[in-house]
Image 1 (cartoon, rainbow, N blue to C red):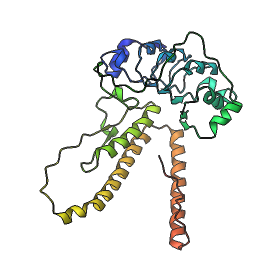
Image 2: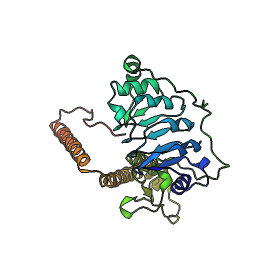
Image 3: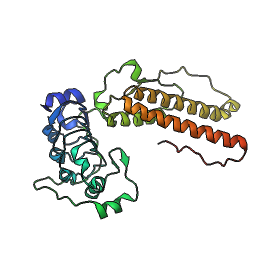
Image 4: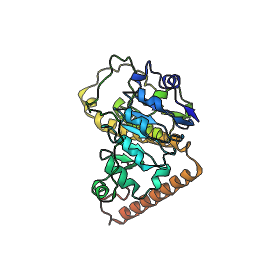
Length: 302
């Protein structure tokens, strides 16, 4: 068991001061004391899964905290979530595989006391759950002595000299191994590429994995001015190329994630893939018979 210290935080986040730390990932670090997070007033994402943390009290002093990942720790009493009730920005919480999760009506109780959550234990909160939480969830008191936080909105710490980071775990960004890099394509718009990598890194952070890094696109030589007819024909080919590139990047990201899974998780992925392949085959057969409607059998993935 160990205690989180300032030297570790600054080294991991590459920040110049504790005040400038916004994202921190100490997955699987045998931590039992994380009281130092009280000195991180601007931290937004904390990934501390697979440790030995027994209380949520220290997180009550993180006014800008938006996402808290604490899977597989040692939180025994569900009343500990009372320490999170005054956090105005908290939207994502992951507590699964803690002893407190065996409490009756666990999910309803958490959502009743933390109504701002949009995702709990990697499951999105649907429209029906708030009402169910009010009926079945237990009310948990706010412990005495906690600070009041006012939601002043997002601010940019221009005076902190910090490097802005919005992806969970991005603060540990070092040159990754070759099999973790996502190839870039010169013709793909930066926004589309970054959006895909952001979503992939979001999932990797929740799993406690290192973020993927996109290769910087190389500048292409200027091409001569095209005629109007050439310009008019560009959108369709560009759209097709973008779709193909997006599929290739998704495949690369999925393959990188698969390497991090254990046998049990791989079995689940295998079953899901087989199910989707079966659905796609059924859909194709129905289309060939001419009796299929236009509704997709496989739901679109986020």
